[in-house]
Image (tube, rainbow, N blue to C red):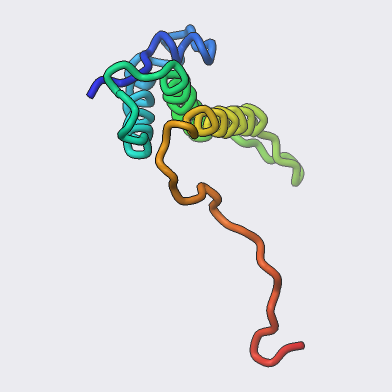
Length: 138
């Protein structure tokens, strides 16, 4: 089944015009991954032959999140850290920025897609709980 969004939409939405830094294959792969996720959770009552604009936007935002995480991964591998006198100097700001953008894009994607998806389990990874005594501690 064809993807809902396309490379030009992802590039335009995220202002990724440099095809050297962001190759076409990486964009297309991110769109493919997002499409698989969207199809898995999309309610079958919606026509995927002519999807709603919000579904296209949601897939585009999710593809952008995948793409930004890929760029962050590349940035993480390329970073060179220098330690001088106990002080560590590195480029973590760019990596953290890319990851924050990816998180925001993914949140927006799922909020946009929410009306079109099946009820699913929470995306919450962990939750805090009250402490309980262990082994007879008070």
